[in-house]
Amino acid sequence: MTHKVTLLPGDGIGPEIAESVLKVIDSAGVNIEWDRQDAGIVSLEKTGETVPKALLDSIRKNKIALKGPITTPVGKGFKSVNVTLRQKLDLYANLRPVRSIGGIPSRYQKVNLVIVRENTEDLYTGIEKEISPGVTQAIKVVTKKASCRIAEFAFKYAQKHNRKKITLVHKANIMKISDGMFLNSFREIAEKYPDIIADDMIVDALCMNLVLDPCKFDVLLLGNLFGDIVSDLAAGLVGGLGVVPGANIGDNYAVYEAVHGTAPDIAGNNIANPTALIFSALLMLRRLGENEAADRIWKSVVVTLAIGAHLTGDMGGGDSTTEFTDELIREIKSRG
Ligand code: NAI
Image 1 (cartoon, rainbow, N blue to C red):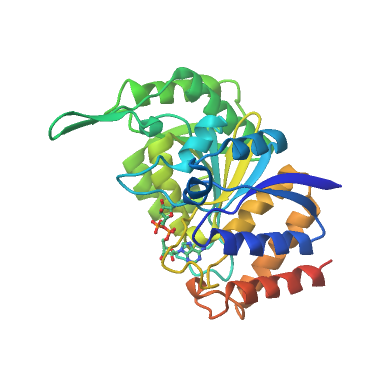
Image 2: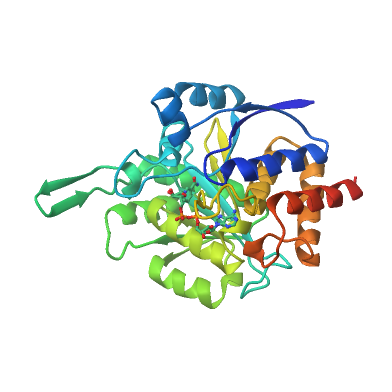
């Protein structure tokens, strides 16, 4: 069968790693008809829009997309394409599985946790202004509806993936009303899932405990801002942003993406590491029901990294993106 998937290569290293992923998926025998779309700077130059209608139409039609990183100007310029996509398509759940991988140098060897982050509100609604010269204000929005919805998502995810415990992360001791609502909504939903342990932790304590012993956590559920920060911290526990996948999921659509940025310092040099986008594509393949291919690619990546003879520079090797990809494809085909 042929799947139809929207492909958003992004900019910077995006097109290079996207090309690698396409070759890898193809080598595992999965047929995908890719609908290539642009966003951000690339589409701004072509269409005057950073999130063009054609892109949204394509995702709405295919219901599934793979996305490379996209530049967001800091402190000025256009609103983050990632944030816009999440809001326009109501991709309310951000999922980031964080697992130790043999061959990737890191401080911990047995991390296996999943971060679920609420994607649509909190301080990321973009409601901020300068009230008077030198005085600014940003508004944190937390609704009961979104808090219950993300809690339901986390419990259903835990049930489906045989996870035993969800830890809700908050700062309700200080933000008693907003984070208080997030926490209380979680507790309400938890009552429907008595088989899953539901506990909670204040975000600062969580950060310390994660660094001391990440292996004791299972699923972490966070609001948008804390989720953004803690998910990068967690990636650092298993080797960094180059090896963790990400997905933005709603009731109707799912966008799978690498969580690192466009790496402008190395873009265009064919040295970027495609592993994170490959792992994100594996989550996508599983949603498409291509579990055998996903398993085969996963094993091939793990073996290639463990052998360590063909790694990109960020992983301590000297191979180009193309050489690493070719080696991976050789491994995938040898398991076919
Ligand atoms: P970055 O993740 O692009 O780069 C940080 C460091 O990691 C750089 O030294 C870079 O070379 C390295 N790096 C990142 N990905 C790599 C890969 N796959 N292989 C090898 N090395 C890699 O973060 P930075 O510099 O803060 O952001 C650059 C741009 O990316 C900004 O415009 C930012 O807004 C955007 N960005 C986009 C994201 C997305 O689309 N999901 C996520 C994060 C940042």
